[in-house]
Length: 159
Image 1: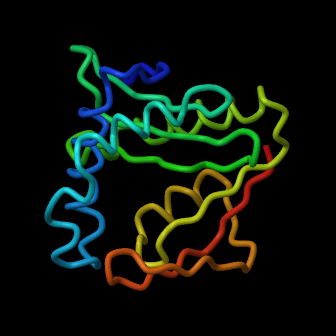
Image 2: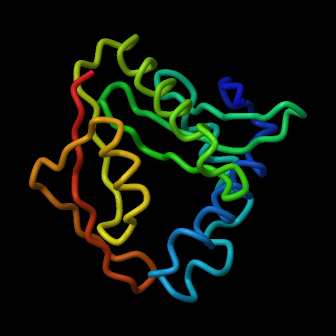
């Protein structure tokens, strides 16, 4: 069972560890780039600071209070910005609990629709989002990240 709460500055490095573990397992299509930490520790401190209200950064913890997942939403835009679960806690309902909490935060801020982008190769994430009611809207964001071209379809969900 996951417990959801707002992130605090002391969570930053644990959030980074969850991100790194999840990326190593799920983003293998990025090759060598996914095998090593993508961001330095200070970047995770910055993520926590940037997600102070009105933004929302939530963490999921397990019974011994270990951080096992996180999500970030930007209510002013209606965006589901980040969602990662440590692979050891995948398929245990953590991602769904985080999604539900994120949707509630967006609804509480007056959002009537949520949107997100995810890598087109990230089949597992796409399956999770589609199971939660997200549908592709036909738009795609393209970018280059450290020499890798990314195509990210946009998904939307009524709240």
